[in-house]
Amino acid sequence: MTFLTVQTSPIEGQKPGTSGLRKKTAVFREPGYLENFVQCVFDGTGGAAGKTYVVGGDGRFFNTEAIGTIIRMAAANGAKRLIVGQNGILSTPAVSNLIRKNGTDGGIILSASHNPGGENGDFGVKFNAANGGPAPEKITDAIFARTQGISEYRIAPDDAGDVSTIGNYRLGDLQVDVIDPVADYEELMRALFDFDAIREMFEGGFRICFDAMHAVTGPYAKQILEGTLAAAPGSVINAVPSPDFGGGHPDPNPVWASELVAIMSGERAPDFGAASDGDGDRNMIMGKDAFVSPSDSLALLTAYAHHAPAYSGGLSGVARSMPTSQAVDIVAERLGIPCYETPTGWKFFGNLLDAGKVTVCGEESAGTGSDHVREKDGLWAVLLWLNILARDGRDIVQLRRDHWRSFGRNYYSRHDFEEIPTEAANALMNALRRRLGTLAGARVAGLTVNEADDFAYADPVDNSLTEHQGVRILFQGGARVVLRLSGTGTQGATLRVYLGRYEGPGGDHGQEVQAALSPVIEAVERIADITKHTGRNKADIIT
Ligand code: VG1
Ligand code: CO
Image 1 (cartoon, protein in one colour):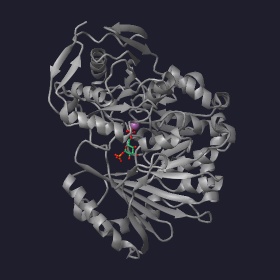
Image 2 (tube, protein in one colour):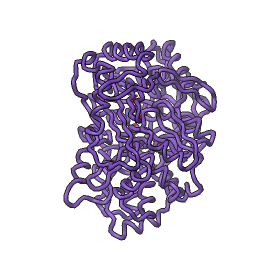
Image 3 (cartoon, protein in one colour):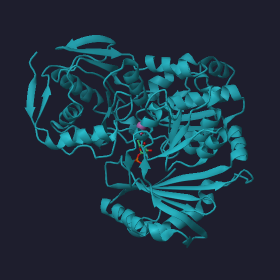
């Protein structure tokens, strides 16, 4: 087979420090753009010759075409073998598992995660390393450097072959294995959890609603929950991946998963509700008429993980991203295990997991996971919850109430100001950073600032230092606010303001969240001048 070498020139690649390339779908569809980036991924990781990769995506618009391009380029670059999900479908945690299980050289995931899809939506390409996790900065920097100097890419001229049928075929010397996207993942889940106990619970009448949000977890949840675990037919809603996620935003939070919220607050609400995002790595958890904040979910899963066979021996440690509430810290302290605080983004958990320092980790943005893969895993969190409920006997709302009584409650909310001009967002953060040294002791909105800093992380495994990861302001009495700019948006800047307040075990724990946080909301407005800088007096999305 003869391959084509196409002349090209540098592109605007992935932002340094981010773990994937996300752009408008239209940008990825510009002639040569995707090809260019894929060549940079190969070149930046020592070339594809002789290598094996896992390839799959979340089914969004352009997924199938992009997979075809990657297959043709892998062949032209001398790769040995590709493991591809049938119809190009693989969730992010499933890719992570396949990389680890097959010992491949890495994987390429096509997704912009929770960002909307479709012709006018977003698309993304992410390279995962041989440990199954998002590429660390060393690798993304090398890929980025390549995007600045690339001059040609290699591609097979032919048709990429048929990935709609399970089996294998060859394209030149490249072997393409098309696999069932769910089977290996289900096998892994079966090894971690007490499937018999969960199945008995469902057979006893326990009801669940799982909202796949028209995204990739549909086939996984259908097969595992309704198939293997005997949840009632129809328990999984919006279960067929659609190219534009049914016109919605596949972000599992109370705003975008409003259909689930309505079902869970209805008269015949099921016992348990859950949703997952575009690529299946996030989770949202609900009880009857009750949203369990991701930070609380992480704390509760840590406290009760021992109910699942895989974690019955206890956890070596836990980790949370810095903006995540400190609820899990209190649990870790009582369990006598270490708790690590990392910058936002799953890649920072990789070293801790690889070194065996932590078993479970999580983020406030609805990501929870463990050392079973190197990505966050939406369905894993749901199954761990089901395993805990099946063994514990209490319902989730009761369990949470008891938890607050014993550990106290961390009221928590995130306010997002979206699509603000980048200059305005930078001006706000710069002004705040300049004033950091003067904030300690200040009294604002009835609160006193204890200390303020710009979060820096020294990785305890490789000692690498990551700075400027967000401004933290701690108040006397345990309230806290964090401000940082999003790294995953594709339009303007998004300011994230994370708000928290702790109420000890003796409190009533029954306040409405925004009301409980109102002094903190007022204090951060005054300290950071959000309205002045952004022209907004209200967040766009409150979760
Ligand atoms: C957001 C979240 C972060 C998460 C990241 C990727 O990043 O805040 O916690 O790790 O998305 O999630 P940012 O920079 O926009 O705040 V997803 O489900 O790609 O995979
Ligand atoms: Co995601």
